[in-house]
Amino acid sequence: MTESTSVPKLADTIVLVHGLWMTPRSWEHWVQRYTDKGYKVIAPAYPGLEVEVEALRADPSPITALTMPGVVKHFEDIIGALDTPPILIGHSQGGVIVQILLDHGFGAAGVAIDSVPAEGVYVVPLSQVEAIFPILSHPSTRHDVAPFTPEQFHFAFTNTLTEEESQAACERYYIPAPGAFVWEGVLANFTPGHQSVYVNYHNDDRAPLLFLAGGADNIMPPAVNKANAEHYNKSKAVTHYYEFPGRSHYTVGQPGWESVADYALDWAITAQKSAAPAAV
Image 1 (tube, one colour):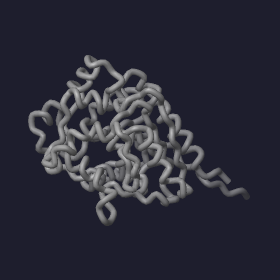
Image 2 (spheres, helix red, strand yellow):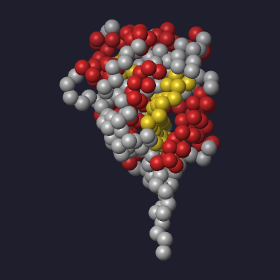
Image 3 (cartoon, one colour):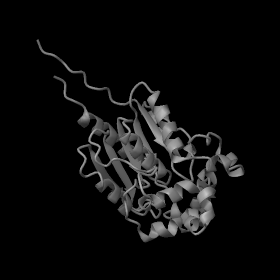
Image 4 (cartoon, one colour):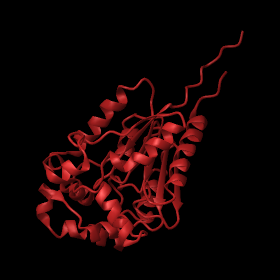
């Protein structure tokens, strides 16, 4: 008599994790595209940011109340309530949140797009310094919101777009970021002990992880994403890096976003199949 081992079912749910200076509205096109492919798609806001962009601009106090551990716990609660592990896709700060969630045992596969680096990545290209200098040059932002002017947003996020296109994206999606998150990311490598963006790079049991980088990204350049991915080299878990030439940090919304969305999903599906145990 032959025994059989059931092969785990592929994820039927996708959780999208937005980044800083953005809300779940930034995923609006991705939600529709993945829904049309038959997936249940969840794009949660960080806790307290469940209102519209315009309301957060008018009253940014919920932004300053955020903490990274609180945001991670919020997503763990959402994902833990699902029937089966989902595919996790995060952009920017959402990318490092996805890394943390995978390290904590959540998700069937993860994709980190233009990711903020986890603790231990020391690569800091000049364009990244220039992009966040408006925040770091004002220490008061550490305990307040960290705003961008439209011009600063254009350099950091939408440098491959025209000024008019960048202004339209800024008006549609932009909110100020929690300054504490920006400062914590910068200081993580210089503060004793594990910080809020720590992951265990040697975790052999986490789900597969893909890094997607934009070749023209100013605030999270490809060198940062590649260095982050290389920190996982000693783990037996699957880690992959891919770069889209000429794409900015706004890759989830700029023209051609469909190719990024499809690559992320196709890779996650293939990674799940490769990681699944064979039937006996």
